[in-house]
Length: 121
Length: 114
Image (cartoon, rainbow over all chains, first blue to last red; front, side, top):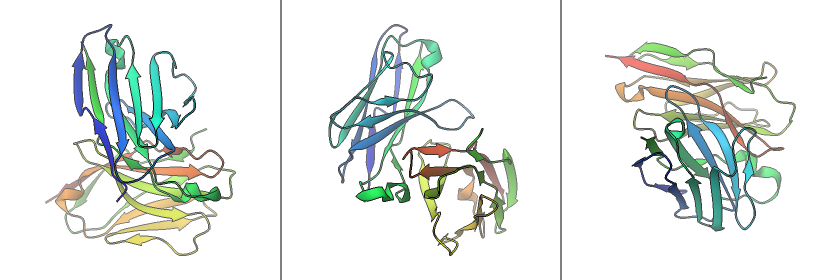
């Protein structure tokens, strides 16, 4: 259980274009999803928390107008990299966990999609 | 300040031997969870093991065990009987009750030698 699907696995785009990445929870409903970015040989850095039916919460230093997040349903969150530039080339990975009621959500591991490798030329 | 610190950038381990990956954390929250993930070269993040801040017993999951020392704020991962397929990046992570976010350490690359 707790499968998260991410699409596409890899994408190459030209500088200035926009790219949309989808993250789906296949067997559970996710009111919250998380988007991470990982540069080569580095750790995962949280970009934003995607909340179903409300605005995403962005981490400090992440441009909300450049990385548009839409969490329109309980099973789908999308990340759109707008006007992509070569420095946006990275590995983007989403995650979610089945919801727990009350204050116990910290007990629940996040399950990750397989990631999207974005290359901007 | 770093919330999760993994001091070993890389390690070699002989096949069939055990290896310990260090992880220390920093939090003022009383309620938190500690997690270890494996990331092979293909990129996916594989959840390995979890330890809750209130758990008194060390977590075990097959060949993985977590050496949890709460007073020292450490949560080291022990992999027993290493296999070639264990070669990967390993990340320690923490999820605090207050923030709900999962924060990762810098990772440790493990290479298992035949």
